[in-house]
Image (tube, rainbow, N blue to C red; front, side, top):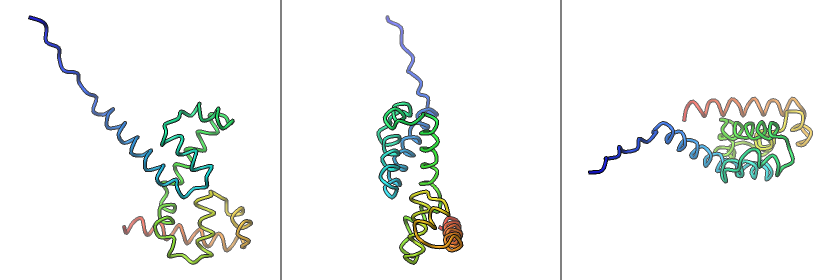
Amino acid sequence: MGMRQLPRQVDTAAAGRATRGRELGERLVRLAEHLPAGDRVLLEQAFGRGMGMTELAILTGTSYRRLRRRILRLARRVQSPTYRFLITHGTLLTPEVRRTCEHRVFHGCSLRQTARVTQQSLHTVRRHAVMLDALAGRWGKNF
């Protein structure tokens, strides 16, 4: 009689990590639809199609480190409570506040850049940003 082989043990922890990583990538790609085209494509390539950072860095002509930092910042931005609040409840805001918040959150502009683009005072932009942070924080705790 031949020797019986033992069944292969499946590393359930590794399988769970892979599944969570895949789910996170799919969620990031779904959330990225509100980003500007360049940022959206970058997240889709990195998380949707699974391109490696090195390959993306070569294609974009940037260094590996710079690209990695940019992708991590984008991933953090689309997972933030303010981003989620703006895409789900942004219609509740006035058009002026919404425009300001979209530049801050979707485009990742600084307060000064947003003030310049929207032609508002820095004080007004800061007030809108504080209001959005407060609403998003309150929304995240109550829902």
